[in-house]
Amino acid sequence: MNTVMVGNFNFKNHIHVMNNVKNFIQTRRAFLGTSAALAGITILPSGISSCKPAATPAATDGKPTSNFGGVQIGAITYSWRDMPAGLENIISYCIESGINSIELMSGDLEDYLGAPKNPMQDAIRQWMQQQRAAAPPPPAPAGNAPQGPPAGQQRPRMQLPPELQAGIDKYNEDIKGWRLSVDMNRVASAKQLLDDAGIEAHIVKFSPGNWEDDLIDYAFKVAKAMGARGVTEEIGEEAVKKMAPVAERNGMYAIFHNHMQFADVPSFSYDPFIAVSEAVRFNFDAGHFFGSTGIHPNEMIKTYHDKIFSIHIKDKTGPTAEKPNTNQVWGQGEMPLADVLLLLKQEKWPIYCDIELEYPVNPWSTSVKEVRTCVQYARNILI
Image (cartoon, rainbow, N blue to C red):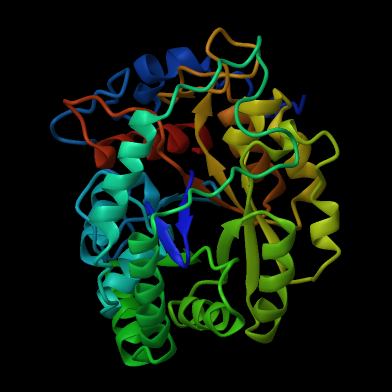
């Protein structure tokens, strides 16, 4: 997932399988057409969902549950970015998808809490679209070379016209004032909405790595009040050094998400970040890791399982495919989803597994239905 940052504003915003189950797991490509029978449910191929989704197991109180075989399946709410926003809507998507655990994007939460709207958002989005349309297309990478900036370099930030930058600066001052005086009773109300629906927000993704310390503190305090155990941000040396001390003071985790760093930078390692603080944890994106490196994700999970708080799961092609590192409908790519889930089940490691829906959704489906299908896919592996 990519986040465009302007000031403080986010624009949306060969490990073996257990011997006693290897005869159970069928090939991933056959799964959508055949293995649903194992659980008595119906799943249609290629992103097509039935008009009436198959029933998801519910707890005795009627609330959804997506813990299968001891493995907690959830979703990052970014998966529903094409749907109407808002915390109440997120709750309905969770219920329809059969999910009781989420990595909550902060935009939906802050909107519920009453954050001021950004008056420049539409103008900036329009300007950015114009810039992209006018720019020449980037040269295609040679062979299977990774796309993006050279190893170790970040993408340069777009320089906004002065009038747009002035608007952003004014908004940043307004939102800072609001954040530092947010009504914590309203936060308690937001948590109660989730509690009443049987949904846990184990992470809030504020992405505050470039914020001032008092605003980073706000992010952790609000996340803690929501019952979360940490705040997520994209991984980087500066963000880790800024967020870790604040996480420590709040008794929380600073949790960092990877993209293609392990492929782009040969020397890239989690180890220097771990050395910064005991509060540092990782949101390991197994899909990005496999799609860009071709290395089995279980290699990383076994090594860093005690530092990995959550895993983003998705299906992708590998780096040597005809279309390398490309998001796929679950079961149609090369990502070893079953291996990852069964490793966690076997080892009983308390690592959250969050669906990040990134493959294109067909017009006859919705992202909510697709997340539900992913939940059922995981369930049939784990039960």
